[in-house]
Image (cartoon, rainbow, N blue to C red):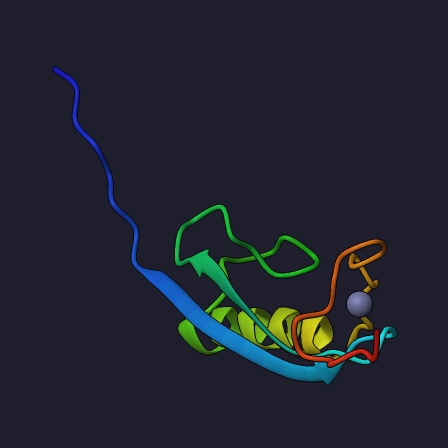
Length: 86
Ligand SMILES: [Zn+2]
């Protein structure tokens, strides 16, 4: 017989507003998650993470992403926000 084990999940969505290298004002959103499960262990692998530790780990991932600079992917795209003179 087959069955499925569903673990509880800690999920956080982070949003960052920033000015791109090309001058556009942008908003990016990303969701980070980890499950509470017996294999999600602390660094020395001595025990599973507690709920607080899982929450802190997800938060740390999100904060690192929010602090990291975004590359400009707009090369060659027309900028709809900027009015250019002909
Ligand atoms: Zn850009």
